[in-house]
Every structure is written in structure tokens, then in C-alpha cells.
Length: 100
Ligand SMILES: [Zn+2]
Ligand SMILES: [Zn+2]
Image 1 (cartoon, rainbow, N blue to C red):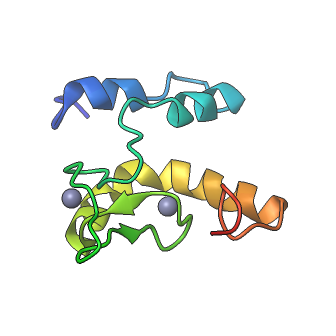
Image 2 (cartoon, rainbow, N blue to C red; image 1 turned 90 degrees about the vertical axis):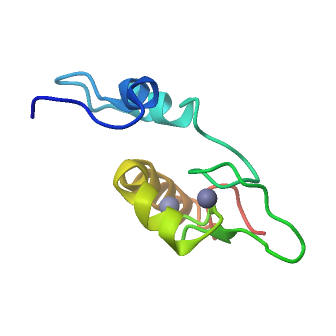
Image 3 (cartoon, rainbow, N blue to C red; image 1 turned 180 degrees about the horizontal axis):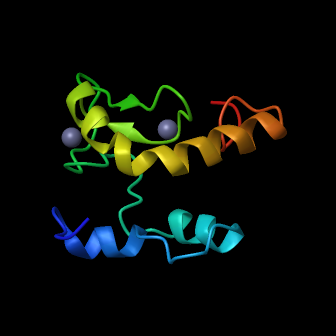
């Protein structure tokens, strides 16, 4: 594994502690400082009427300005995405935050 690449502050915030995989892990994800609303998760570009943001196709909770940024973020979002998607299914909602 060796060297760390990318934004080390954000990576550190999302790096799971060895042996921890329970609810605390999910809380950490939900409280992650890079959980931006209404703007791209990668570049924080805000959506406009002319250029609305795309949402994650699975959890429909996270926004991206482009498919490129969605793909770029997927590795990091995957765990949170599966959590949100599963939670939504359990309550019968379209996404984690309900319909809409
Ligand atoms: Zn973007
Ligand atoms: Zn997602």
C-alpha cells in the first residue's frame, strides 16, 4: 500500500480504522466533511437551471456536475452509496431522504 495519494485530509477523514466496520463507521461517513449538498462532490460546482447537477444513479443522494466527476468520486462514494441505497430500500423510499 505504501504512499498516500490525493487529498490527504479528506482521505484521512474517510479512512476506516482497522477492525471497525459497524455503525460508527457509517456515522463517520455521514459526517464526512466533504458531504456537500446541492453541488458537485468533486469540484463543488453548484447546479444551475441551465446545467442541473446529475445525481448518483444508485443512491440518488449525491450530486455531480458531470459523469466524469461521478466516476472519479465513485471509489470513495461506493461504501456510502451502498449504505444509503440499502437504507432507502429498507424504508421503501426512492432514496435515503425520501421521495423527491
Ligand atoms: Zn464536478
Ligand atoms: Zn450513490
